[in-house]
Length: 255
Image: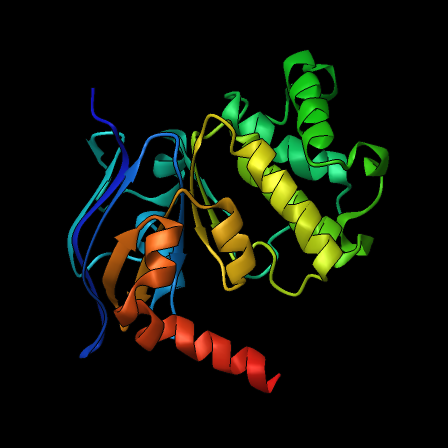
């Protein structure tokens, strides 16, 4: 059995004549929590767009659980078991927490856009929606409109929507961005819980989150991965320190 959940093979992405992703190779193992770090402009979000089908590749190949998904539209990739969140909160602000989660659930259960079905009577969807709300600690906020939730709650809701499809490969893009220390701690606990038994690829700037969560870390600099290793080895890697971690430390020193 192929132990890889996600394989990126010589990925390239150009915007016009400008190369953004320059030959990325990455192998994320089934069941691991893998962090992708790097300076601003390194191409991390672009890489997520390529994996999830939002942007077309210039060249290369994306394999999901041993199957080639290169060039597939996002909805087909999602059906094959990959789901992602976005760097900017991506929710339906005028719908309740419950309705936001249920949208993702209904699609995954095969209801699609058959609005003639009485969705309120769809017991399987209702039970799964309740379960996801419990997982993200928003069951008590079920009838609150998403647009009036706190920022941290909105991020938790987006994670809920991401896992609602039942995907076993989850991509999270900057899930703790803009959070306070206590909010970040809650978010990390949530991410650890929802990724149990699944494969997680996470883009994150907060190094305490990265070193707390990740089994392995890959460092992306100017569209190329310069190292992939355990958190301990990445922390001790001189080239990583020079290219990225040193710059992060300096930012904190001047903050």
